[in-house]
Length: 107
Image (cartoon, rainbow, N blue to C red):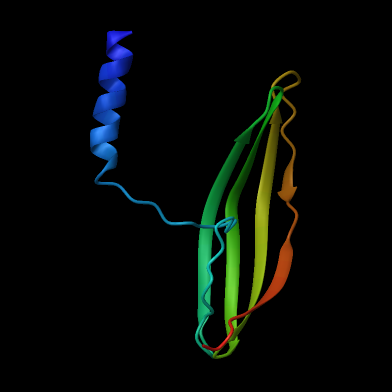
């Protein structure tokens, strides 16, 4: 019990120096838009564990292109692998892709 408290305190002290940024699948989504005529390419990795299987998206490719100063087109394409713990079955392939348009309002 004392070790758990000590580890919690230690991690709390270390965490004051850390910060994080959102990345693909952009659950925190980037509110800005890519500049006109410019590309933004993000590569990510996600991992999910369920009771009888684990799911990995790697790489998760997020490509954005600035069409106008306040308008971008976005495409997200994951390579998905699932491992079933009870059978050991390991299928993989393109996951659920998504496309979208992001428009930023002028102030």
